[in-house]
Image 1 (cartoon, one colour):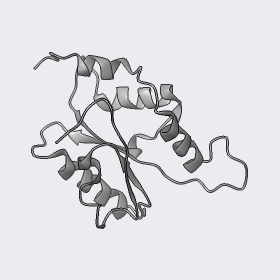
Image 2: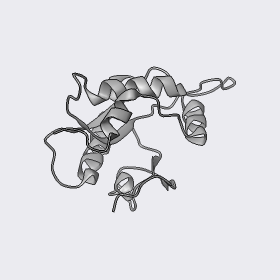
Image 3: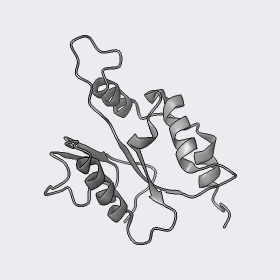
Image 4: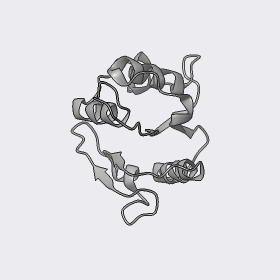
Length: 143
């Protein structure tokens, strides 16, 4: 299949830096460098990246490596939702299902934060998050 634009090669390099305010919010939610008392909140990462081996490595491996290198620390694999390699249709279908799975495990999603409409689909009027936040993305837009 290849990578004509180099996007997968760039992702696999795991050198992306964190968006500073997003990392700050993550650290506050996880009580990293926060004064006591602080109650940790579970944070889940739901991505449209397909979990299909590339260059002998799964995207979840390099995504977790990049999150760690960017300052998020060691994220547990069960807190990262990747899109199935064979999935079809809109990425929002995958993301809605991921949030439903998180809730089925007893979690309440208090905030859904994303930079694309597909990140928030199904949540604008509920049912999978108490609040949604759409962040600007100056690099790309998914219609």
